Image (cartoon, rainbow over all chains, first blue to last red; front, side):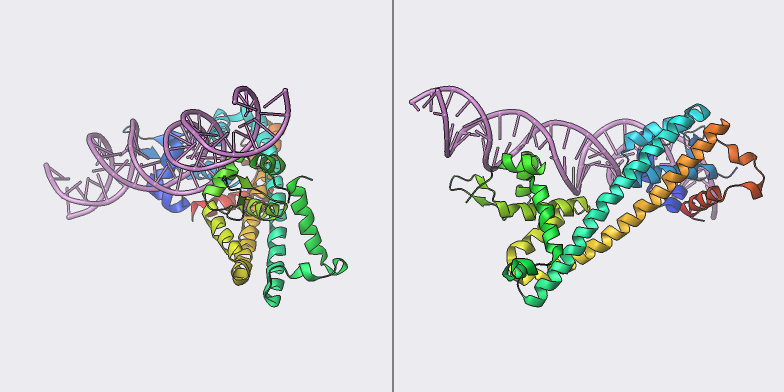
Length: 152
Length: 152
DNA sequence: CTAGAACTTAGAGTATACTCTAAGGCAAGA
DNA sequence: TCTTGCCTTAGAGTATACTCTAAGTTCTAG
């Protein structure tokens, strides 16, 4: 059986040894074996749960919740349904996050366009000089978003 | 001229008064006027930069960088190009974030499917009993991702 | 067998972003 | 005028997620 030291795992995964120890302290690495003297003995098969932890982190899940998932993982077959449900919720959460970022991307695209136009005209308030009916719909839509934010 | 108190703004935008004061302290609200006695006098037009701050926050920009943007905003016409470039970078950052979340969504979808199958069979390691050529390509792809993470 | 590298733990320190408390100031209605 | 409620500031406290230090232990190569 080939074992990996914490340093090996850190180098391979890009998670620092400090962080791996911190994760262990927080109860995320219950699956990692130890030698008699207490040294962590990572194995080949430990990379899968480590990858799952990384994915849950990137999905915005806090460490305490990941801990909950890892506890289910350690309990084996009995918790399959709970883990299924957890990933269902995770899917929904990710869909919402993606939608929000797409909305923010739309704003950033608008701002790019707006400032490009402003630069051409050398005036930040360029559109205010146009007659109402000549105002670009993108501006009207952004203003609608601001009104919405303002809570009219 | 109609003024809004910090409480009004908090209620309308959903940003707490504490947070608004914190943003001010961090130099994000330089555009907000004050009465002679020092009370913040928010106006109708202040909601647009507040919305922009909210968008930058949701895009994952740290307060210190937002402060930099607000400084450009206060300087007016001369900084149009810098602000254009800032939103261009923001656009790229958002595209990368969305891509990453989409990758995480794919993992969550895989996990949902995997656990659903595992639940049907009552065995977490169900696929390991199948002959190599019968293993679902989704499993092979996930395992490839894990190998990739492991840094082969 | 010993040097040195890498391992261990406990606990302190850092960064970010709030969140709240304390002490006091201002403004409007009874 | 006084009470009430919202305003102000400074600064302390909280939560999260690391990140590092110190002191000591273990492993490996010469």
